[in-house]
Image (cartoon, rainbow, N blue to C red; front, side, top):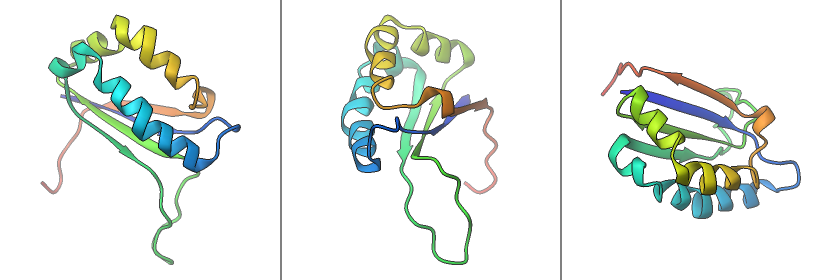
Length: 114
């Protein structure tokens, strides 16, 4: 199993609430519509920032995260290389994500507390 974590930046033309609305209600369902995702995606979650309790942590300046667990590297390739991703999902990303300032990490997850 591999996990892709994306630290998301919105396009400067969008407010944070417009970004969150689009990410949850438009982009999430589009990603879910990828036929290959049903077979290869084990989990997909979105997180949008809130203010951390005072004195706890400093948070990075991102507009959200997306975390996707794939069954294998080949499964990740099948989803991200699919016709649906290329023709519908990726074009949607360009309407709300600042790709140049979005960070992506792919790795193997290690559980410390289950």
